[in-house]
Length: 222
Image (tube, rainbow, N blue to C red; front, top):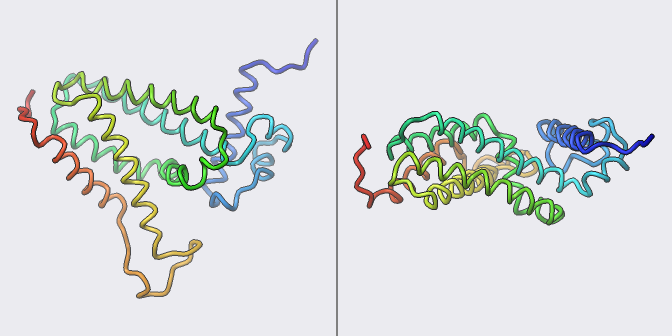
């Protein structure tokens, strides 16, 4: 007999640990969460935890990449159900999805805002590259499926648009906190910097797409 775990068992345990970390992230800030808390919430020992993830940053980087993979796969499924997609319909779709991301996937947006300044410092490079490769493949397929619905929607432009969408939302999320310090409001009048992230993101992306497609003479009904 052997006590060796199967690949499926290892995958399930890694997912259980990741779900525990995600649950904590929905209640606490990244800095407040410890590896000990994650282990306890997942029902594993700290030693077991470190067998799967060598740092807190690695867990949350994995959550970020897997989360975006799932989101884009879901979006691709909705795209494939369409028989056609005009440029105007595509613009409206992007704006609608931007609102949905901000309102329905707030945890994913928070994670993305942490990626550059925090997560990449200690996340495992090899595992991150593997996750990014999978994410690239998903977004590449999504871009191609969108472009297949309308010849004016080039895969390269669509792909850059989703990158821009991510950057705009993350940037606005960071700016929206300028009137706070450690989650406490700064004195009234010190900053007058209240941002409606959803509204601003939609406005910026709308202008971006108008510029992106302004040279395309495309009939809306095509």
